[in-house]
Image 1 (cartoon, rainbow, N blue to C red):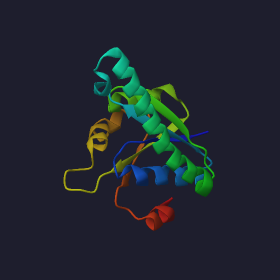
Image 2 (tube, rainbow, N blue to C red):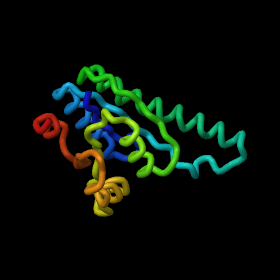
Image 3 (cartoon, helix red, strand yellow):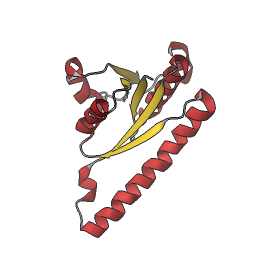
Image 4 (cartoon, rainbow, N blue to C red):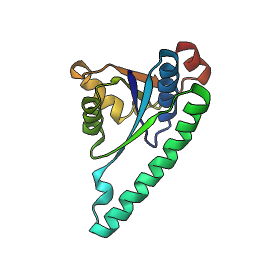
Length: 151
């Protein structure tokens, strides 16, 4: 089965990327893998404190994921899987693509502000020519109706 890999983070544009991935997967018979990356600098503390912070970060991610997963299951008939990795976001995204041969498309949300599309879109689009899968970039301010029309 072909899977769409979408990144779960705290950005506003993440929402439309999730919607797009779920809608496309639903209409094409695919699946969705949701990847969340915990940056390493969050745990540069004493060992015990770092472990507590790591557990809290995972719990926050799982709660955030469950909001999207419920919508995907209820509205799109898709049961997404959650993958949590630790490290720098871009290398971890690339590692996930390499580790899961069923991933066929990487879906990213682009910010709509004047600062640019966001760090993930900027960094990964520079490497687009050498990636093993295509990237779909979803505009952060595209309407739900427009997403439904194009998926």
